[in-house]
Amino acid sequence: MRELTKIDTNVLKGIALLLLLCHHLFYKENGLYDDLFIAGHGLVNEWGKVCKVCVAIFVFLSGYGLVKSSQGKEVKAVTFYWNRMTKLLLNYWVIWLLFVPIGVFFFGRTFELVYVNHIPIRFLLDLGGLAYMFGFYGYNATWWFMSCIIMLYLLYPLLWYRGGLTLLIVLAMSIIISLFHLPFLTPIRYYLMTFIVGMIFASTNLLSRINLTSSTQRGAIFLLFVVCVFVRNALGRFSMQFDTIICIVGIILYSNIRIKNKLCQNSLEFIGRHSMNIFLFHTFIYSYYFREQIYAPRNPILIFLLLLGICLIVSVLIEKIKVLFHFQQLESYLRNLKK
Image 1 (spheres, rainbow, N blue to C red):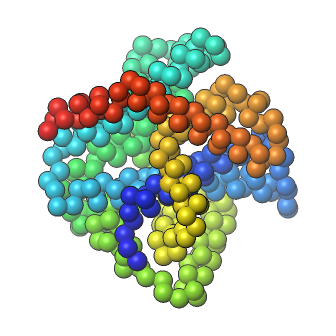
Image 2: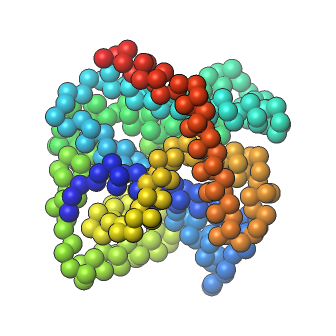
């Protein structure tokens, strides 16, 4: 089997984005959707909890993609930081400028309400994507992931420069770190190991070596995946650590099966290309601004499709706004300053 291509990466991001929406919509029994209960467990709610694996998928793809883009090149820390942070923060600030003022002026979600105290400092930290590093969620709780990915980007040149043995040592350390609460490592507590695994898979071309040639082998991996999903929700406090395993098994399964249906593949790839935008703004729509409207159908499938449809339309409009204001040229200009 071949390694993940750019198309594969976008397809997997699309899958992860769908899981993200399911997770946020249904991981709580909030009484806003109809669930099917078996033995006291809501099936939709249990599925929503499992969908937390979306974060591990995004992180794995980040580690994997960074290594693939770095192979055969010298990774200069300053240039790497500038390019990655410029792209990450510019997109983040676009969403910030579009959605935060709406919340402040039209939905009563003021800075005083969100930040409570030390408002100027918390505002600046949040604007830099650093809020969760300093122990608070910021204007949008989903943006905790910004702190996570920024910390992983900061670590990447050090990890890549040191090579394979260091990756294995850090992987072992990351597993230990995930078992303890260390405040300064909170954003990457559960995901440093996933990031390292992604780097290892990319640097060793591991996916191309795992070749499931028979339907029996593929069936066995699929069964393992299903078992992992059930075990994950039964683990309680250790469930987050298990997300990495589910992510690995799932990506191995995907790399050996692929999606043959072109319409399905193209749809997931399209969603994947919009995953960054939707990750950044979907919480405003389903939770902060239009909660009652999104959950109005009560049917989980309709709720999910309603949110997905709105998010895709909004993201397409945002991309058109970016084109109108020459966002791509600005991003390219800033990135070229460090060349």
